[in-house]
Length: 523
Figure (cartoon, rainbow, N blue to C red):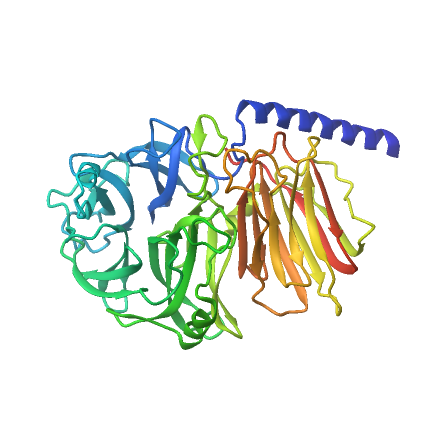
């Protein structure tokens, strides 16, 4: 009976692969479970706020082309962070300019006075970008403005008194991220200003006062600072709280192009000051990165997640300005990362930020899980699991011991019938994770896309390493060492990857546990 059953499952696998190839040809490279716009261009996530049971996702959007253009705020909502409902465009450009990046909050106590019928308004805070003024050579072409909604974010009214923060002659003055500071009972705005950030405070979201600046002498400065975020996290082991500042930078990332750095410290209501150990780390490393891959940028977190939930939930734009306008998609362009929960992790170097997929992602898991234990990997003997499903959409978990005498690399390899290959893994000698998309598919659209292997130095020093990799049609997201190391990478294979194996390039490694679980699409 074994042979007929095996033949049947293999036949089903062949049918499924044929189906994948057909769908792939119809909607080339579109992810199955990562958020994408229905059509046209998307970049930074904006205005992320939770209200009345819905996660709102706004995003930088140009509806008339698949390349960057006059910015609007696209809009979608979700009840579970996995399945999304597309809604009409929320904010359109007007005489004051394009609608650049920003944030949104629930004004629970109606501090703005913009509420209605005893319901708190949703307040969006964004940057106006006056393109005509920029072309005339002006430097004050960016300013901060607000809009408000009384119908759960479905329609928006721009505030008659805009801008709420005019520009005094600073060329890069944008991307306001606003939150309620419960400790100091005030609204706090962090604003990207050229090579640093500024903190502004307010009692009502309408009148703002400059408080302080941070970053001119800290962090990476290979490009302009953008899309900041600022929030508190609590160490679950000590109950200590720390303030976390995110700042995206373009260019200047750890593997070139755009990326996001972070800082950990304290905030007295006016001034942000680094933790001593974090400051010492910056003196050695210049920057601490949220994600070492090429394709996680401009990410920010949801505001107003209920206290009983307690999570700080992050979402990034899955692209890089080195090639974002050129990637080989047809009717749509760009996707977002998986939503991720951020947490503090205590290390010997001080606190670090960990990032792991939200628990809701488990809704995508299918039951046909393959597991193996106690695998001895040798350089001449790759391990290829006998799967009854195509691994195109899957999550791979790998737990292995660090050898006493480390040699070579431990590799997860995905490939297809076109002999295209994507690899991700750990370099045991140099103590760094890596992602290699050099031969993973189409890359001639940009000389910057696949010219080198991307690496991430390990932070923890435990004797066991566990990594988890989420594969979608055109992306991989690595979460390693309790989420302290992330790498997010795009690739564009001619046909879906349908084969997986793990291997050791030199020496021997003991794999405690290997698993691959198929995922279903979310759309």
